[in-house]
Length: 226
Length: 384
Ligand SMILES: Nc1ncnc2c1ncn2[C@@H]1O[C@H](COP(=O)(O)OP(=O)(O)OP(=O)(O)O)[C@@H](O)[C@H]1O
Ligand SMILES: [Mg+2]
Image (tube, rainbow over all chains, first blue to last red; front, side, top):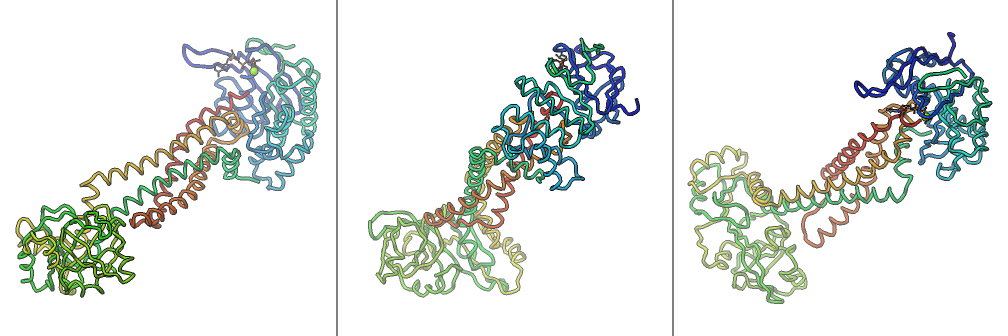
């Protein structure tokens, strides 16, 4: 319990204020242990992405308790949110790579935030992780000259390079064909297991459910055991 | 491997055509500002050159005078009256008028500025005056400004070849005996200098007692301001006493405020500034707008708003710095061209280079600040 990477208790969340307020999450409680791979499924509009942005410190929670990697995020200030973000690796549906930077430079952007690394270490670490995702010959390509799957692999490399303590992924395979999607997810699993890093992944893709240690299901803003 | 200077640099230089457009825009704004400032200063410099080079501690002018090319006259006796003060060392009357000059080669007539003063004393500190003063002691002789516009005829070349040149001024035949250097100004396209007596021969109807400028030299060590106040009290209603600096200011003020010229140039500078700002804003705003998702991703990774604001600020800084370089180089070329074509004194002084650099920074920074507002829309919560 003490060592859970993510610990959520009785979290409610609503968009908007006053009359227009619309509650999305109801009494959500969830724990993710270090090294655990948890998949989050559920119908469209059920609140999966919303929960992910709250755990990822991208939005601030108003009520309940939300502890992520030792940071209490309910009612946190912007500075506290930014500090938590630096320990998390995000993988989005769109790769969101900076197109004026090469693959190598994009990965280094996430290492720039870690001042304890020297320049040489940063570039070596970026090169290693690009090798690991199978892009050893594409390091100096700009995103525009990479395929969709290659771009997503750069995004994974970027998320993992800084050795995050938690990975959040929202439908990372949605824009990819089945085979590429499978490769990406396997790669993500291997790398995360190596680093002992827990993963919370939203997915609609039934073919990748087998990588999960645990699957949680969301319906109308509530978590239901599946 | 790269701090955020180079992040801004990489973003700015990634698309070469867009970079070139941006540079051309900023450089264009620089050039516009340089030319406006250049013309304005050239106008003020050339319009006040005679006043600045006048060998005077104090000058008397008529209260009704507005500018040097259209001086109203006042009584010569007022000037001589000042000699009763022991501090006044010397006084010299000067006559100024515009008269038609007939080009000796093609017979075309064009008006130029005629100045007349006693050739015993060198009243104007311009190159070519002092050494040629003796010529003016003969009747119907003049000195010609070598930088007068070409329409007056190529007098310098003819004199250089040793040919005698005579022309008609106000329908009186005069011999050009030498050259001096003044330069065309916005008021006069050309200038000749002659003796007071010759001036009165050229302008037959002008009375000797009616002078246009009274030049006063004081004894060494006298404070001009003290004497100025003293003299002003005894002068008749229609005479003003000015120090030399005030005389320069008097002329400058005419061009600055008495005409629309000062306003027009300021408007020109403002237009350059606005054009540059709009172009820089276009570039910076579209950089932010096209990269909202990427910027939001950076925020999700833990980059702060300050970092992103810094990137945009760096971009605007780089934009102004690299746009300024071609801007000042092309301006320099245009200044040289203008100088050759018009003899206007156009120089890129350090002060002006710094001022335009400062304005260019301000211009790009202002558009950067406008573009930064768009950064707020980069919300990391929206990108999942
Ligand atoms: N910024 C917002 N402001 C207001 N309402 C929002 C906002 N973002 C999402 N919602 C609403 O919250 C609800 C849950 O949205 P969410 O994106 O979390 O669903 P989801 O489970 O991720 O769905 P999908 O599987 O389609 O991605 C939806 O009804 C949506 O309309
Ligand atoms: Mg979603």
